[in-house]
Amino acid sequence: MSMSTFKALVVEEQSDGSFERSVKQWPIEKLPDNKVLIEVHYSSLNYKDALSSTGNKGVTKNYPHVPGIDAAGTVAKSSNPQFSSGDKVIVTSYDLGQNTYGGFGQYIRVPANWIVPLPQDLSLRESMIIGTAGFTAAIGIHHLQHNNVNPESGDVLVTGATGGVGVMAVAILSKLGYSVTAATGKMDQKNFLLDVGASKVIHRNEVQDETSRPLLSSKWAGAIDTVGGIMLDTTLRQTKHNGTVACCGNVLGHELHTNVYPFILRGVHLAGMDSGNCEMELRKELWQKLANEWKPESIEQLSRECSLEELGSEIDRILNGQQVGRILLNLTD
Image (cartoon, rainbow, N blue to C red; front, side, top):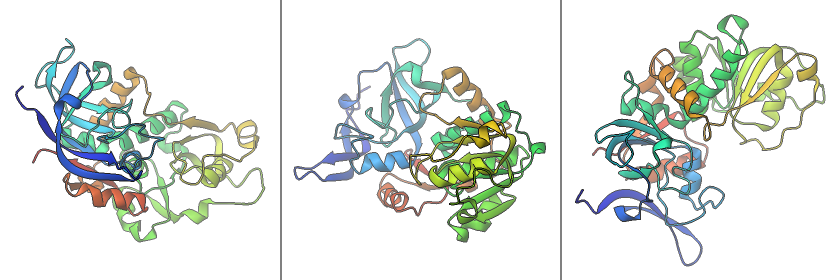
């Protein structure tokens, strides 16, 4: 390959300690010395990407850096026999976009064991509309099904429903026949959530109970919680016997103040949604489902497309809590 540079969104630390991001040509030799070089066609914007783009050392330790925890494209070069030039692949999670140059550039170079072959019934574009957000939602739904929370079990709550994980959870659960109650602080997006598949949309305040009552009236057969804090505590206290709550977020706080009664009197399950270190066997299984029976009917409706040059304003929007749905980054132009 003769090309020496590629276009990327690069975040650089300045002499005064501030961070600056810009779209520029970046030397391909700066990519890490891993086995598989991938030409990135699509990526997507996640909250962790926005943090990395502003110099958050808890996400990315060293700069300059190219963020992007999601990438989908074709193998350009491989020294691992598992992959050949031209193979269509997905890379999410692990260290991509955190301390390894990520999907906000036209090329990445990653270990072979980070890579999922693109399922036959999924396009590269669709895979990045789903991205880490949809894959995380899929893990939560896997937990619900594993614990026998089925469409016949009753209503499922999704908190933070306009965010990436939330909107994907609403869409997938709806596709599978669940009755979904979407909780959000953005009631102006009610029609959007109904169109995506929610059966009912409620204000998030309806799920926040600050009393000390150890149990509340049973409402939910299960829940996908993306915000944590008091919302997660209230959801646990409202979950029915043998229900499951899957959680992945902490926007309302990383501490969980609750009590044992939902667990010892109702048999409620609390399951974590860790997409970053999901075992490869389950990872491939869930991507196959997302390509087929779990693929949302309204998948294109879930995202807006942007270019690298437009990505900066979208990063600002997600940091300000203004993002709705998914942002698809198109790197093919």
